[in-house]
Amino acid sequence: MAKNKEPELNAYGEKIAPKSPAKRPAPVKKTKAAPKQQAKPAKNRPEPKTANRRAEPEHTIPAETNLPAHTTNHRSIKKTPLKIIPLGGLNEIGKNMTVFECSNDMFIVDCGLAFPDSDMPGVDLVLPDFTYVEQNADKIRGIVITHGHEDHIGGLAYLLKKVNVPVYATRLTIGLIEGKLKEHEILSTAKLNVVTPRQTVKMGCMAVEFIRVNHSIPDAVALAIHTPAGIVVHTGDFKVDFTPIESEIIDLARFGELGNRGVLALMSDSTNAERRGHTATERTVGNSFERLFDTAEGKRIIIATFSSNIHRIQQIVNSAIRCGRKIAVFGRSMLNVISTAMELGYLKVPDGLMIDIDSMNRFPPEKIVLITTGSQGEPMSALSRMAMNEHRTVTITPMDFIIISATPIPGNEKLVTKVVNELMRAGAEVIYESMYDVHVSGHACQEELKLMLSLTKPRFFIPVHGEYKHLKKHAGLAYSLGFEQESVIIASIGNVIETNGIDMKITGQVPAGRVFVDGLGVGDVGSIVLRDRKHLSEDGLIIAVATIENETGAILAGPDIVSRGFVYVRESEELMSDARALLMRTLQGCLDSDMHDWNTIKGRMKDELGDYIYMKTKRRPMILPIIMEI
Image 1 (cartoon, rainbow, N blue to C red):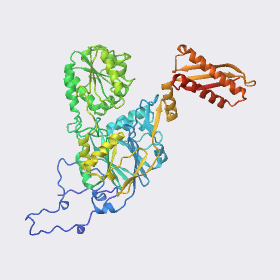
Image 2: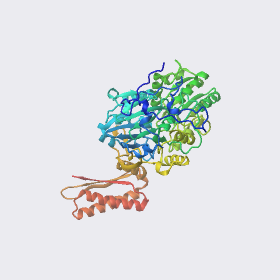
Image 3: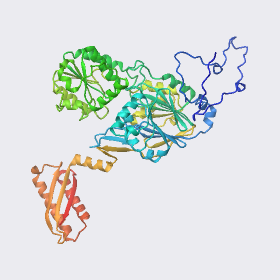
């Protein structure tokens, strides 16, 4: 007996009435030239059900609402406009955030952070600018997160303090988000929702379908965004790994199904667009760990890696079990991620394998594996403190075998090299990525990127997640597959990319940029403050202080000069003495001319002293004149 089919739903969740049999197209008539057993059209034949076929999610958008890209009607009928507004993640690495807007509905994909560059002294974190989101808070239907890396979830707590809307993510990602919201003391008010691959969630007139992908963290997903204008596929961070540490591979079949139905636009990860070939499987690292653990027999093993790389940590655990070693964990972020992954079942660790830091001394060093943060050479990380002999628990010795299981992020090469040098100076043997296969990327290389383009067959292509050179290289891959230049859009943050289902182009700009977090301050450090900090760090500071009697205008004390970060005063007494004399003449000249505007006087002192210092030293320190009245 045939099973009853579930009713199909459109983008608004409404039932679609079944088509009348009378409206079916007539079967193709046989001709003399046709073979005797000509097959009927495939679309009139019911699709066979197999044990391996996955069930469609409840709210999947039926194919009839999104015609293939080559259909004539699809090109001629304008649809409700869709706006795609990236607020981060373009022309940069990090702080990924994109707004999708249609009619009176909006939702957000990811809300990450970036780590400060060397030209941001004192800054702890960099967030996207939330101005546009706050201005349209009443339109936001939810926030969708692709996976649990900091550049995708790190800014979420700061956004939820301003706009409290539902958050949708997979189970591990929600677990990591809960830890962050707990630190910010907003977990009790957050609306967190766990989703699974092939599930679809409505966002007003749009719907978001989750698709499994492989990445360097479990539970990563891509998104198929069903809109009145058409389907937009957002890959998130992905690679194609046919032998992943977790059980299931990327759902290439679903991408192919969407491509056959017609994809309006593809937004695809560009991080490794410069790398040829395919990304190696994570199991490569596991094989390397087994060989290195055997090589390190009789020594303590210290492994530095990304705290979020749970697959990598699982392979370290497996190697430790095989060699009969105990594991100790260092670094707050590492402890938080490992405890969450173990609690949710994503990290399988036998009882008794993990030991407390304070219990390490009970075991011989050759029976210990330390897992630590610091693979990027961060100055305050556990590995850096070990290298500088500043760690309260661990002292590096020649009996240490250290593996740095990560590739330096661009800009961190010098920091990593410094840590490696100091570790080797202490006598340790150090293994790093360029020597052995102790790290593989979580991002797709060129052949995988071309596979995604070929499967989805989008009419328009928007490369995302990368610096400009990555976006440009990814666009070149699309051109090599036959894409026209007008169908590829390289955007910048703040651009409004608008489409009506026929055309797609950049039509405007919204507020976008960087918001700096310094301590407890969010946004109170801007470009002017950073400019001053950089000026101070490069040329130092001179403070000129004078005391003037208010009634008579007489100079009672000073001008005195205080120097910080400019020159050592005791070795530059002649320069300081001449500078004081110059300031005395300048100040006295102003007072003799009946000038009593203190701002003007301080400006004159600053200009005169600045010109003199530059003439003598070719340096321009920050000059801060101070006049006190009595």
